[in-house]
Length: 438
Image (cartoon, rainbow, N blue to C red; front, side, top):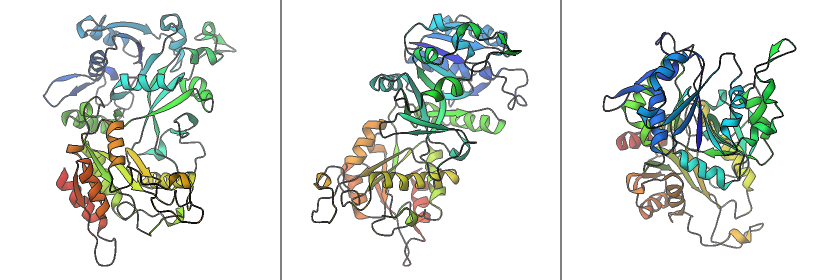
């Protein structure tokens, strides 16, 4: 599969640290002391996964980039270049490369981001959904000012909201990360004529915006899918973010987050662990985060462990809450956490209930399942989805069934404490446990 990496940006904000170096050549030091340009780390990761046919689109300090990488042979890949002499927008080069792309799917990556991703897994997902475009999406610590992707239950994208757009009050923390699998049909469907790109029409040079003109029109068509992943993708466009990325490289976080490697997770119960316990929570207005829980979850986010919520929700089987209502409650949880800089990497809930006889119950959900805690089904499913080593992972909750589920899954376990007045000590207890784990 061919790979296009857009590497023409100026990196204006980070230029105060590296005034004479194009952004793709900014050096990053790994845990073993090895120092390489950020794009070199990424190309080597692509090579190791079998992606060896690479096109770099370059503009700013293009000669320095081409001098460093040459034809790619010393890195075990084949590299070609498209030099953007005239600004074409962030997707204009794709139209100039239309013949080179052919008719097969290709990776489109943005060199402004630091990434280490299992792209073969992403490509398999793309093909299994028969998609024209797959967006790499992930949660982040600032969804309130990021591009949000709204998808249906099958992950097909229905809406793409910028930070300027009107947003729902509560939303899933699903952010576009700037990595894509694209079929060239997406270019053809845009209605943009290749011959006009880069030419002057009505006194203006014709440019192409990837998101606005090619990708967003696919929302709601069933042809664009969101690939949710916790793998490492971060912008390093400011000095602060560069230092953060450098620390992650030196701590080994970047490489280990690649899902081709076994992951470690901290599984959290929901009611009484993340939000205040109110019995069977049926009303979204009753959902409140426990004070201090976001700080504890932020520590998980910073640690390299995945943070995954697993919760029994028999209110679905009992007919007391509909699935879309539960989804909105969970969106509220993600929104409130995001406002405090925290996020979860995954969420699993059991909708079943073994006891019958409730008015309005859903008969097909009233059975003894394998996912209702203390059974380990949700943890085992998460392990399959995220390549989690359960033996290196933890289950933390406020109830005996949480501990039993962790034991049954082969995890380490911890029971959080409360004081005699209820849940005031929950977050403090959770943070202490997390610090001991880390």
